[in-house]
Length: 318
Image (cartoon, rainbow, N blue to C red; front, side, top):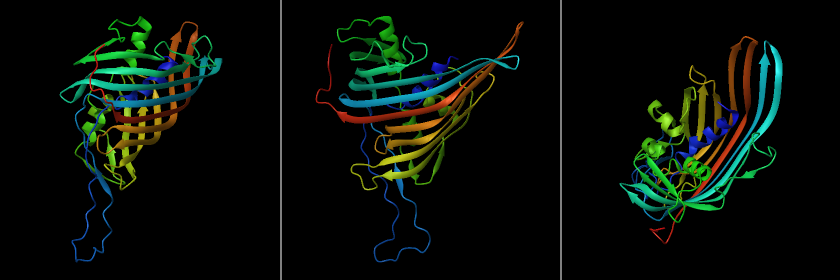
């Protein structure tokens, strides 16, 4: 697995849940003593919120801002001696606006996506110390989904050039798919301090990894607070997140990420993500010339923020 794949794969982990969904709900009120009776002497129940979800509708819109920074140190060791060592930086920035144009059975089937910013810095680029704009920056595309088939065109209905098509498809792959956080939280009441272990059958879907990533040892969410508690129509639930992936026979990748994830209680949509932690991989190759060990490691910083709204135009045609 090439070093840049580490960063891009982890980015897709949280984009999987950033879908333009809307819902209406209210937080569950903590239990209180009936009128005229004194409060119980036992400890008061912890504040709790209930999560809800509603179907996606035409006109739903989300503005997403994502950034990822990964400083990598790579090393090649030959028969116990360091043969090569280098440091590099991988960074990515993307701001995009997605508007749902058509929906069926509660999911987006047609959407318009505008990539206001799409830039990356990578050691394999012509200028590895600078951001480079990607071909999709400043452009708008139409996306149509039929089950697992994704079709992307420009505003005239023409197929974009190969590189644009690939980049747009990678960024829009999860639009119109079910929100895995909703399957975990919808209709569920969660108290502050309560820990939720993400079921193994949901881990791969929630992380959005296509390639082997090792064994998921832990993926847990703990409700830390509600911001603000009395918000109308619904507050924001802030979870502490911990993700741990260890190497296995399929992948040498090791990931330890921790931080916070904000989830709208009325829709199960992600409002923000801040995660940091070490990423490492190591592999060994035995050749006639000796034993080579390749290793790469660094600190990942990942940030995502989403703002949701509605547009006046519910449907458009190219």
